[in-house]
Amino acid sequence: MKPSMHGKVYLVGAGPGDPDLLTVKANALIRDAEVVLHDDLVSAPILALVSPHAMVVNVGKRCGAKNISQAEINGLMIASAHRGLDVVRLKSGDPGIFGRVAEERDALESAGVPYEIVPGVTAALSAAASLGVSLTDRRTSSRIVVITAHRAHENESELPTDWRSLAANNSTLVIYMPGRNFAALQQELLYAGLDAETPAAIVSSASTREQREHCTTLGQLDNAPPMPAPAILLIGRTLEHAARSATNSVPLTWESLLDAAEVSIAETNSNQNLERSLTP
Ligand code: SAH
Image (tube, rainbow, N blue to C red; front, side):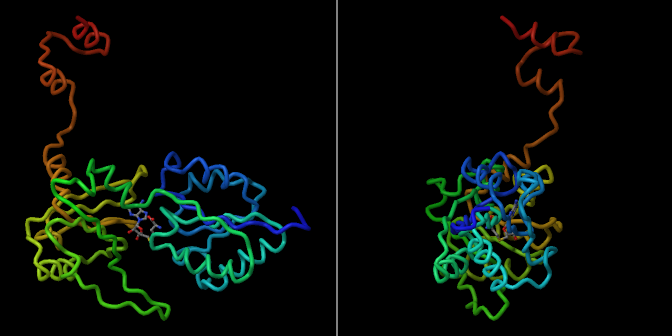
C-alpha cells in the first residue's frame, strides 16, 4: 500500500471470456491490481489471473452483490483510490459498450481520482469472428447498428427503438441483451421492412468453451431454441456466410478428408499412413 499517494482506477475491458483475447495491457493490470471490482460476465479463467493478495468484489447485478447500486460501486472505487490502492474495474467485453463506463468516469472525475479506460474486445466482434463473418462486408453491409433490446430500468429513461430508421437491407444489426423471446423483435423488424429471409445468428458465450451458435433467418427467429446467457443476436445479409457454413458443416471424418484431398489408399488407420501417402 502507498499511504501518501492516490491510487488510480483502471476501467478495463475483459473481452468476451477467452483470456487469450485480453489485451496485453488488461492482462498486466489485472495481475497487478490491489482491488478488483468485476461484473458477473467476467469469466473464471480471467479472474484466476488476479493476485491472491488482491481484494476481489463481484459487483455484478445478477449473482454478485445483489443490491449493489451504481453509487455504491462508484463509492468503492473512490474510497479504494483515496487509500492509495490501484483499482481495476473489470467489465466484460469493452467497458464503453453497454458498460456504464461514462457514469463511472463522471464519478471519478468529480472525486478527482485519476483513471484510465482500457478497451476490450466487445461481444459483437467476438461473435462475428467465430462465425467467420465480416460485419462490414462491403458487398452486403455498409453500416453496423449496435443496439440493445433490453428495456432499461433503475429510473433510466429509454425511448422506444425506432427500428424503421435502423433496419435496412445494407445494415448489420448487432443486438446485445436480446432476451429469449424473439417474437416481438421479429415483428418489429418485419414491420420495419426487413425481408423474412434475412439471415440471423444467435451466439451464446462467444469465445468460451461453452460457445454455441444458431443460424436462422428473421422469419424463423421466433422458433430459435433458447440459448444460454450471455447471448448476442446478429441480423443482416452479411450473415449469409454463417448460414452457408452452418448448413454445410458436416462432422469431419477420416474418409471425408481423404475424399477432399482426392487421395485413395487402401488402409488409412494412422497419421503416419496419411503423411506417407500425401508426401510426394
Ligand atoms: N460490455 C460488454 C457488453 C455488456 S452488456 C461487451 O462489450 O461485450 C451484456 C450483454 O453482452 C449480454 O447480455 C450479451 O448480449 C453480450 N455478451 C457479453 N459477453 C458475451 C459473450 N461472451 N457471448 C455472447 N454475448 C455476450
